[in-house]
Image 1 (cartoon, rainbow, N blue to C red):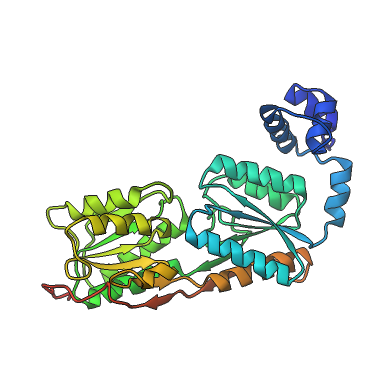
Image 2: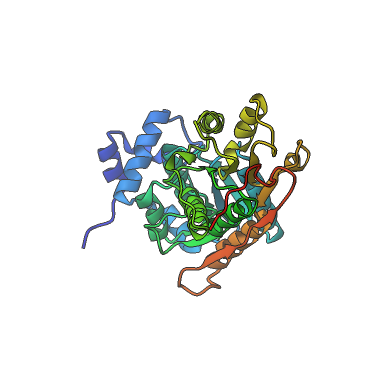
Length: 345
């Protein structure tokens, strides 16, 4: 049987002294260069090293603290989700350590290492789609993980709380088809994310059910960060046969997409019907008010915290839990009948 790694093993592999490793493990006991600290933490993870004090804490871990890893606090959806998770956790007497990855897999890996070091009881996370081995490492260490909003297909053992993304997109698409639109654009998140894939799948399903083909040039998978929403709208509107309707299924890019539409000579909904994910206070105040897919953030937070705390207390059965909640389709004035309706059958 392989012997567990020791602090000397870590020091040797990292090329530092035992004292440096000790300072990394006991934050505040002495200075450590950021690059050195990162190297030591990497070796600790690779070797699976658990210091005795941390091992005792792992065995005696309480439910007093959970970790929350969100993809991007600049995204209003994730900001509101984080706020609600903290509120729900505090109502249960649980503290939350909040980390953001800014949609960066490397920052996500650092966040996972930080949570291991902090010995949190459970982790609620919106994964970027990478770091499969590192998420699995948390499970191996006995730290409960709940994925919220997004999931990773390879990690079937992890609890998931999500909206029915494919159904939400299908309902939005069917609404536009019912208004006579046959050329519908769809701007989604990266295909590497479950939300990006599922929303496009729902869009295609609704189009197929109506007997309509999908022009692949009308479907854009774009990053959550940056200004790609504006670029996608520009590309769609400049097509020889532009869409008469558009669904923005990338919540982080709604404002960017809307800004480009406002800068163009296109009028909503006369020239272009518009549906967006998700609902914000301003979506009802713009002119015209936006038709939206409203995501139930409160329900996502409640179920996520319940699973995280329940797992930590050992109150739930061992098998994986998958909770799906329905989004609400809210029709406002940004969607209207197509000017020249084409039969859909």
